[in-house]
Length: 203
Image 1: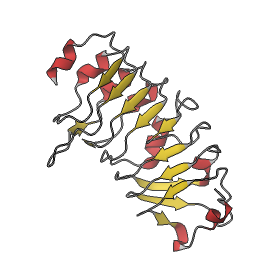
Image 2: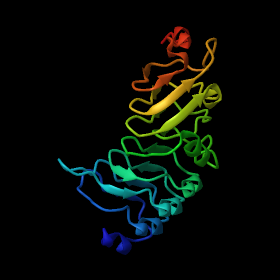
Image 3: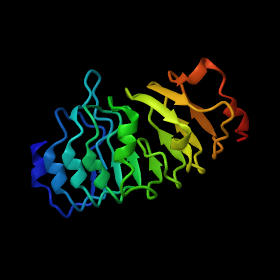
Image 4: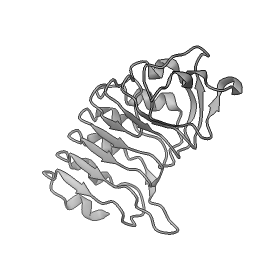
């Protein structure tokens, strides 16, 4: 996408979803510092996903409010520069083939975006306004503990399916939320026992 370098730095809305782009996310996107909405999702054909890396230049989009990179085959790890995206309200990164330890991802998103996010498919877990979490169909690994959910009192939808995550909570844990939908497919439960905390979910 070499034409990206010619776009105006006053551009605020860019939707390039459902195309058949190949190659890395161009670094020129980082020059669009006024951009508030960026959608690069679902750039697939029958045989090929968009491939590339999570370019660190995305961290220069400091005005961005909605970022959708879902349903691509982006490789590598989320750059620490993502932590500079303080105005983010909606982030979609599911089905992106990320291979990164979950705690490191949480640390990146725990800087200046703590309480602003409303919809997130890759998230810092201490966001009090969050009602939807979707990390499905990635290659995430590691453990989730009770502290990761401590402030998620508004959480309604939780999907971490098709990952190698371990939910490590005590047998007597009572979560601060009431879920409407839950998907833990392919995840590990400590002790391989029925999660008794589900009995507290009345929704």
